[in-house]
Image 1 (cartoon, rainbow, N blue to C red):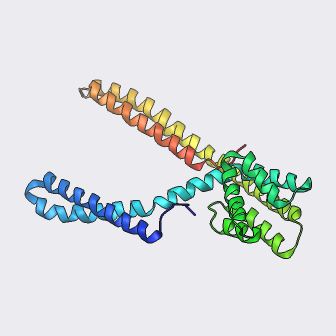
Image 2 (image 1 turned 60 degrees about the horizontal axis):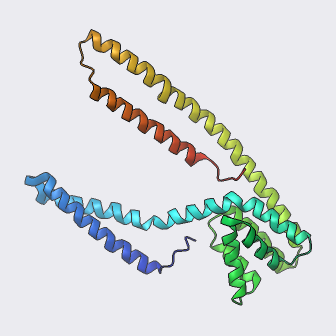
Image 3 (image 1 turned 180 degrees about the vertical axis):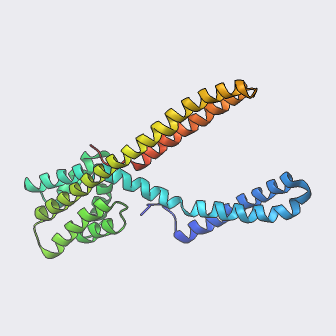
Length: 248
């Protein structure tokens, strides 16, 4: 699903070796940092570094899988409509896949993978079924599943694709509605925690510092500014994370 050109066993072995290297470096840093207790702290640093880095390296395929899923989900609706229009105009399915591979940039490369498998001699049913099995996108899986079912049963591909498109559009409408509800809560929380509280808090801190004779230095103000910048960046990350991968 991640389309990494590496054997799974080799990938795990490489992750294990890299984790050992990082764990050794972490143990050495613990030994230098704790000095007198470095002999005791180093094994804890090694175990912590190994567990953290090994789990990190093992999860890297998930990053590629999520990236591929977002790329497909962003354009799958329009690409499938394009294929449906081609079939309705009288073109065979294989020619429609070739045109989709050439016409749609990001999503086109996933259709190109199917075309390449067919050109290498694989039957179209098997190529489409394998594309469905190893796809990271639920919408792409649904489209390929409808095509496979139609090819194996001899049903009309146009009817199957139309039904799949209706289901995808319904799911995307649900995602957009859910996104709107989430954004209302996020925006309200943002206005309170990132706008109202900081402005009132800094004003009250300046006033109270005069009463209790607390020196409000430039370093404290800069620390507040940096903290607020981190809060702003965290909200931007949250908004990007909850945004549905839909090309509007």
